[in-house]
Image 1 (cartoon, rainbow, N blue to C red):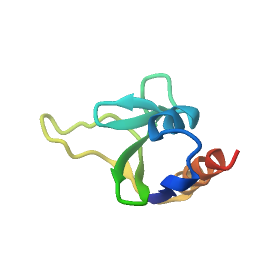
Image 2 (cartoon, one colour):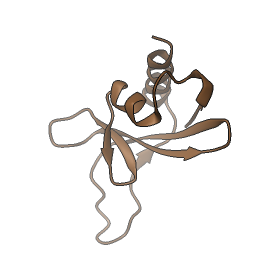
Image 3 (cartoon, rainbow, N blue to C red):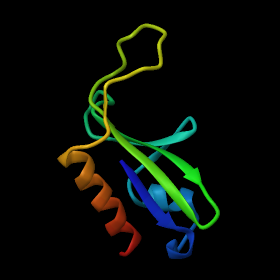
Length: 94
């Protein structure tokens, strides 16, 4: 699921915003862990465009189990992902 955030609506920079929303930097992305073993977790990649950031959000239900492959079983839609997208937008307007 994609969440668009206008740069003009941010009160801080994108890194501070993501931390304020409960996300931790993870390589070239951000995660918010829900379980004690690191999974499930929300995972976001951010694309920066001229006037906005596009947050590509998905839910990793479990650790990848495909050997050296990068594929995983992420949920890109559904109630949990929609609720998390709404929560992120709410953080923007707090």
